Image (cartoon, rainbow, N blue to C red; front, side):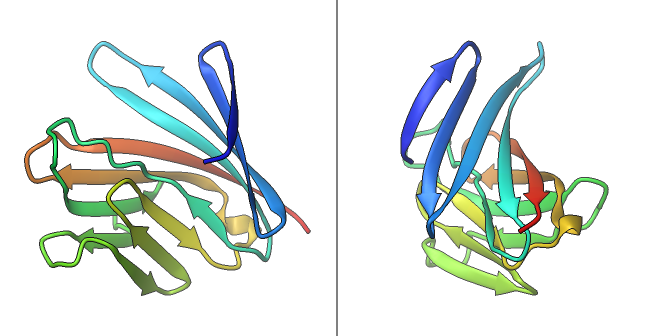
Length: 144
């Protein structure tokens, strides 16, 4: 993923994509009942933004059964992937959104984002054997 530095409980990762640098910032939100990773992604208006969702099943060799992406404030998924239908590694496109699924990640790519794309996105992954995994991405959009 690029170079990383660690400072306290926060990790910063920076990786060049199409001659721009996107900064991924992860916070661990911990509670007695759950732990959810929150990634911060900064995108540029008019360009594509990649939102990461890392697949970390607790059971070895498990794979995703269902992957759902939501934008906070909506009840309907903005994107879904059904892993019961092979192949696992695929690209799915829908209305300016694409999910690329591999064995390690389900990356949601939003094409040509506007300022209205900013917000918190949730990735929910249901596995065949492992417990459900949730992660959040806080997308900030800056102007050109």
